[in-house]
Length: 239
Image (cartoon, rainbow, N blue to C red):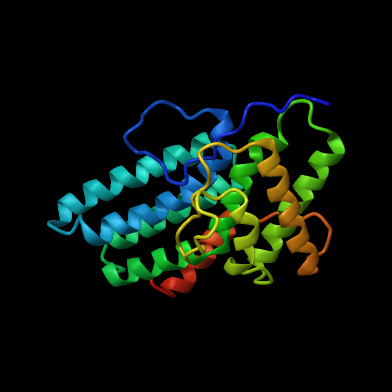
């Protein structure tokens, strides 16, 4: 029997703009979530802090937008998703600076982003990335885990799987298993996750996909398209 490898720490759900060193490749899946979450941070900052003068608002908005885009560019996302996400960041930032959208509308975009299934899917991918891609993992186990994640992504994107459905799987890896998931608030995972935790997590996700009758076939969530849809629906015709 193989010895249980060193536990994998969960990814941080939010980027730290104060750090300037390039992110490691192992944090790439987290950076996907950080890029999208960073857009929400841009909206929050723009809507609640940088309103004193137009000039100050523009400078600050440009600074945050640039930081978020650097994180996206450093990630291992698909090139087309990087391009689309960066385009949406520029789109929202420019719209706010030019007063095409106001603070209330910024809040609507933020709410749409935080309620999107994209958040939970990216957390799931980030938590399991190290385990699935470690050297020596049985190819059949890796293939099954990847297919499970694809099915969960599809179920959440199509509305078959809702937030409360994921509470049971997340209870295995959560700091507080009895704390229900809150809309727009990423679940807080344990500081250290063992192989046993991750195997149970993936097994529970597979059971959920089976119960919801999610097709057992390849699926890829288009991150850029999802973010564009959220922005369009939040402020139709404004940007």
